[in-house]
Amino acid sequence: MARSERDELEESARPAVLVRRSDLPVPLAHPARSFFGGLPKLPPQFEWPVAVVTANATPESVALTFVAQIDLAEVPRSGRSPLPKRGTLYFFCSSVFVGEGHPPCRVLYSPTDGNAYPDRAPPLNLMPLAGDDGDAQVRWLDPALDFHSKVEFKYPLSFLPFRDFHFREDAVGGELMVAELCRVLGPGKPPEPDLLQFRGVLKYEKDEDWPFNWLLITYVVRSILLHAQRDLAPRSYFKPLTDEAAAELRRLRGGAIGWLERCRALTPMDDVDADTKAAFRSWWLDVAQAYERMNRQVRTYAAEITADLGNAINHTIRCMATLDDDVSDDAPRSYVANLVQQNHWKTPTAENGKHRYFSTALHQMLGYGSGPQDATDEHFKDILLLQMQGELAFFDWHSNVGCMLHFWIDRDALAQLDFSRTVATFQCD
Image 1: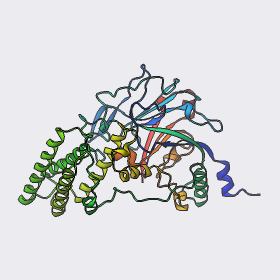
Image 2 (image 1 turned 60 degrees about the vertical axis):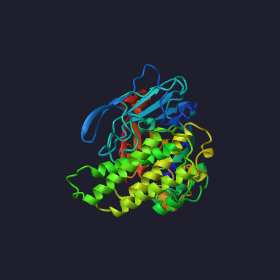
Image 3 (image 1 turned 60 degrees about the horizontal axis):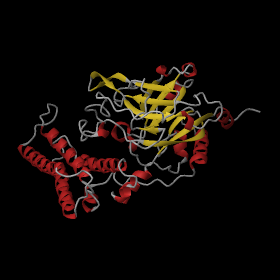
Image 4 (image 1 turned 90 degrees about the vertical axis):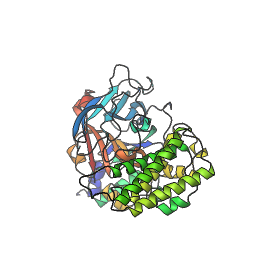
């Protein structure tokens, strides 16, 4: 009897491991042995990897971004896993992905456990996330002042074994994939719209929950100051700035500088009193309306002002989580819940399965992996050490859910524990 497509997919299924991060980041001192971001617990004999990265069209030798540490003793073993039973993998990669299908990367392996050594302090030449001035750069973060402009937030990891299927745009494969993921993760929760991602000016105006501390005010003011200064700078490819627009931008810049001076005199995590909250929201509303009036006269769009505010709120809550285990006591609960729900498994549809494209980011080790282009086919015979799907937890440098960062290694190289032969692929839809 001829085998059906379902039978063939079932027989070719590979054992794999889902990598699940915590909902919120944790302090650097958290005892996790496997985690995204933070600082690696590198053995003293290992140097922090360096590579030549092309950012802004200029090759530059920089220390690579640390993206993950995985203690292999915590990874469940199903079938004949090609991975060592013990030891720790350290993943480093360039966070500049523009024009980089194969970004510079390094994977280091130590036979020791993930908690055998203290955190390694970041080197002075550690690259800012997404480079110095790339499209995905968080420009209102100052690399000289803000730790998380260069170091990702630390998220402890957990692991779940599952079976991975190899297919592309296939309904039968998608059905198997959805069934397997739901078996492991449960049926999922209904998708919820992001509270801040597409929020308009009027909703922010009526929301009395923000600003909830002076760190948030600092970030919002920096973003507005950056936009005003950039829009005042002469640009040969942009229309000449009118006198009225230039005067308006100078007014906005002056207001931002005034707020920034107030921020410098206060502790970042201090609460903001009700009167100051109202005054700051009124000032921000004035800025947003000014940019609406200057639409198409300057480089900045009004939507960027609201997007920056949403990003600053999320970033501030993550910073708070790295200092306090119960961030809900000090930040608006709705904002915290919004961040948490981004990481929850959403009920998949048949179409999600067919295209291997789910609302929830799927990070994994082993198996075939997913991707919008041809990386999984090109590396069909290789071992997938780690797949990191773009998601909002990584902020701007890798926040697109349609992007995939893979680390691949040849089977023979893995058998010899030669991780110097690891290659990375980065692809987006």
